[in-house]
Length: 284
Figure: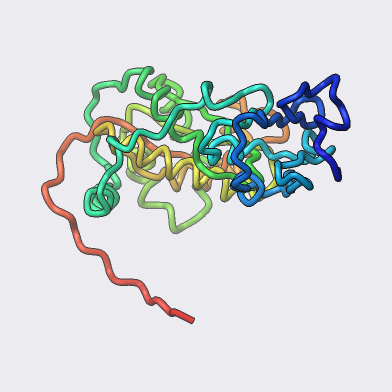
């Protein structure tokens, strides 16, 4: 689009606002300072400079936009609206809540894989809060494909352990875990009071990675609230082989379980940061 849409479509835009297709991206030209930040930041290249240096919106904005919201978030003057939402609808970043690099390092290093849980249940509101944070995890082309299931029913948890054991029983490597379960000792879900499952459509833009990143965000958000998690590797492996697990959790057709976390309140606290080996690094 070579000219501002306020010139091409005055009936839609008015004297001071430029609109994108179907009002997908709109710009209040009375607020725009022509700094070009929105143009530079847009990953889909939907904005360009017009002859008057105001941003010009692509005619394909509605079809090509990935709804990342960067154009609205980066604008210092609040001139943009995306799909009807502007700066007033977006939470501002509070500098007072910024953490130091040292605090961030300790927080991430202090995360532990918890395998001993208190029997006390976690409130549903805490799950909502954690998932509300985890939804900001990056995903391929901002598809946001992750669906969550929180399992708290004790009978269903036992059924899932049974289905996991059944799925793994022909694999010799897993026999110690299966033998323990046959004796009544749960080494599969570690007697956690909750299981958090992430599922998404099969295929897509690498939904394995999308779900793992979302679960990692979930894990850190849970850690910030004093909760403990552990990756449910045996369950996840079995879920890829067992139709019974998908059926028990009512996984939709065309979806797949990509990962899961045991979750609960840690039975014990940790006082120190155990060491980890330093990985090999190459700078090229």
